[in-house]
Image (cartoon, rainbow, N blue to C red; front, side, top):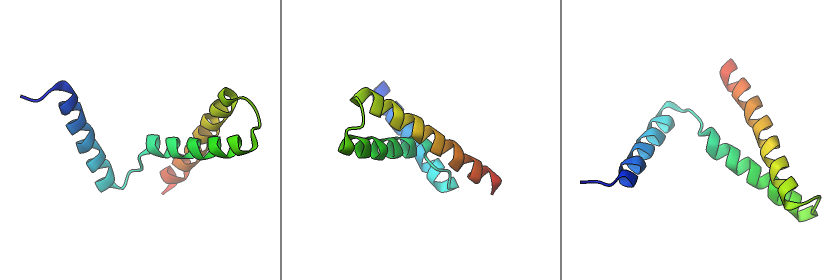
Length: 75
């Protein structure tokens, strides 16, 4: 018998596999990577508080993801 966590993990892996096969981007992963990059750049220059930098990085990542989705939808 498998645990709930193991079942959720297996379902997640299956979803990821299907997404990869269909060529569909993993937008949450992209959002994380973009936000992290922006956050690290902001911290290099210490523009503001960590909380403000984190919020700003996520907002910018969301804007970029929205634009990327628009271009993908046009294809």
